[in-house]
Amino acid sequence: MDFSLSQEQEMFRNYVRKFLDDAGQTKIAREVTEGKVDSLQTLREGMAELGCTSLNVPEEYGGMGLGSLDLVPILEEMGRALIPSLYLETNALVVPLLEKYGTDQQKDKYLPVIAEGTHTFTLAWLEEKGSYKPSGINMRGERKGDSLVLNGVKSSVPDARLADSLLVLVRTNEGNGHDGITLVIVDNAEASLQIQSQKNIDETRLLAKVHFEDISVSSEQILGDIHHGWDIIQEGMLSLNAALCANIIGSMDSIVEMATEYANIREQFGQPIGRFQAIKHRIVDMKLDLETARSLTYYANWAIESGAPDRVAAIASARLFVTEAFIRVASHNIQIHGGIGFTEEMDCQLYVKRARFYENYLGNKQQYYNQAAEALGWLQKEKVVLV
Image (cartoon, rainbow, N blue to C red; front, side, top):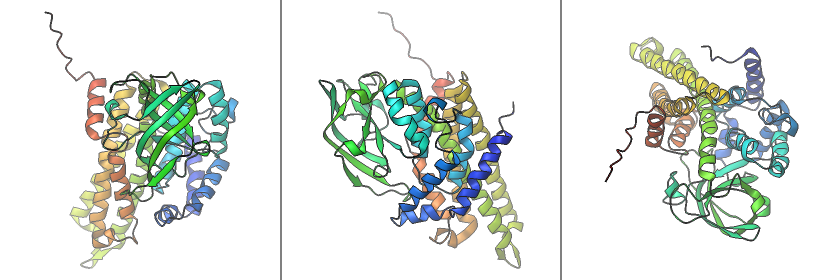
């Protein structure tokens, strides 16, 4: 089967790449590490004009009504430039969830402004000393009349200060299992949130600790059925991880180009280092990782768009391989560049930091190994003992 992108998708990629080339590629990421975030707003407006933000929003809400595969070239190009954006969380996660589980009121409120590029979402999941498992969700959501009162702290929330809304996982029932977890949309402009910046290995992604103290939100802000948010977010994670893989592919592609170019111009012992067998073999290994990851990613996005029966296994397998390959390729690039690869003047270190950030973003390797094994039917079921 051919999972390559269509001619129209490749053509749109060229428009996005030209726009990001004009913006300076990794220049924006570097500005964010220095605390300059104004350029992100300009970037968001430009991408909205291109149609990136409206691509997968339904037509009745001002979008184009396209699918997951159509997001791939955009995400790849953003990955090449290490764009620190909430595009992934907004368009790849929230849009599909709103389309499937949102009320008419929620769709009317959020989908048009997402399509316009004037509204972004982030995901508030992780808690202090917690995990991405159901038992890690301890933030409380208490029903009071037609409202839900939120109390607790969310940690490592990506770009919380830049987001217009937060998709928050809260516990609305007793226990520590997946029953009783609810998804709530909290608008920054309407809630008095205490946001505290946190350090991050990837300085282009501005993590924050968000304190919720008696934050009252309307029950109309609950996404899906109350107490059943875990199953909803797990479905959303399929779309997000497929999209995340596409973003990483763009970064890996840029790394391989960077390493190849450097190997051709850097001379040692009177010849380019790319002529040395050790360097040639390493670049070939990097290229093999890239193309394997690309194939897995394209199939994963095709599977989620077509509703293929093996979509869970395909996406979990892609997420596992791609994140590990990203680390390998970024590390090889540093070694090929030698000592200069560690310096801030080179982009090599930016890609290494992004690779390490995504390594445990929204789950660790063991969780995705288990998810893939379960989807493939490899986990042995517990024996039923009849007494």
